[in-house]
Length: 468
Image: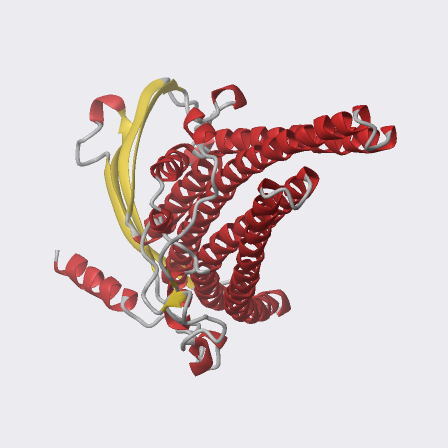
């Protein structure tokens, strides 16, 4: 018993030895540690954004219950998220397999046979009698992780699991953005269809006016023909908008895990583009890099690659194990009796003398870690670039939208002036209709700009790694 205690103590002492290979930490010269990566965004317009942290479920900022419901449906049933969840479950199982390497292995066996054994195998020349022979036993083995191979394998597996968990978060961010874009597409197509209907109605009035002018001898037939052509052109726009709305509805169906026939009917009622009434909370670079799932995934991939250097390095050293077995072997009727009982305890050292191949695997692991660091830096720089670009684009398009709003106001003023002149008998009705057509054209430009702004906002939330 004392001997077993000493062996167990030695095992624990050996298991506590430091693992070979580098211990992971974020390199000091990594891009994420640069002060410029941690500060405020250069392109954030003060009038349109705040330094507040991005809230969870950023789509609530639109205050649109239909959009809120669609987002929740997608997060619950999207097929890409189901794939990501399955990948994470598999990664957790792989981690459990790696963690099993540090456990004690147990086994039991039992067998019996009616047989005649070879006499010469027992150094006898005569034939042995037929007998019932049995064997029962149990064994225990333990791999002493003297050089940390198992510990590094566990580190690598856990890092891989955390990287896949971050990838699952990235899928959530992307799905949320795709749902918002599709919903904006439905609303924009319906709003454009309504505007086209107004243009068709107005163009129809112009056709009637030209016909009356021709009947009165004040115009010629080509004017009617030209007006009819413009009416047909206006009517030709309707199928485009209807098809776009249908495509966006089917996109929403797919994103929420439904077949096209079950597209969300509640989205059909949207006929104006969602607008955000408050400045956008964007935080700063430090918060961005903590929140972005792809940055977290790349950092965990670097951690896993670093741990695998230790795995490859540990393969250069011996593997040491210890085992204990006990049982009973002999005639079935004698199993369990002292004459048939057996036990053993011992150790095993196995060492494949490292050659060029084993050392090359260490170099390959080092190179993989270097590549993972370069990838990590690239993802960090890419996240900052995408966010600054999204902010700059949003700011410029907002200025453009303001200019188009002014143009719309001027078009409405001109239309109102033309109407009053017509009512006073100082201008023709065609001038009045022309003014109203100008208003519709300006409204179309504003609508397109509003759609761009909404998509810019979604792109910005995507770049920020928006939550859910």
